[in-house]
Picture 1 (cartoon, helix red, strand yellow):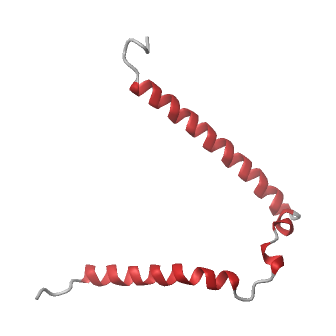
Picture 2: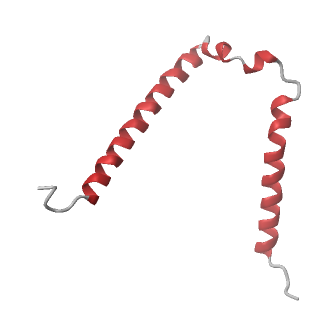
Picture 3: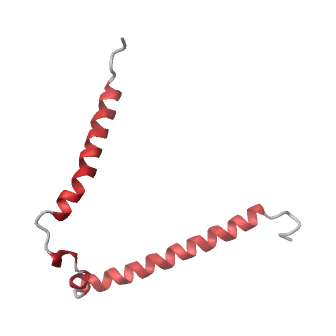
Length: 85
């Protein structure tokens, strides 16, 4: 029988913590939750809500630009040398 190392104990502890945290998410979301807690209009009425919308649009454009750049790079890398001249 082999001895259990410190790495094995750390892995078991990490796994147990992760499972417990994941299982507790629904509990923390829905205990004492009011329907108003899930209403996004309340957030958007604030200055922070306006800033949130700006950041969402900026992130959308950034992702779109990154995908276009990646697609162009894939096209260049997979093309034959004669096609890129």
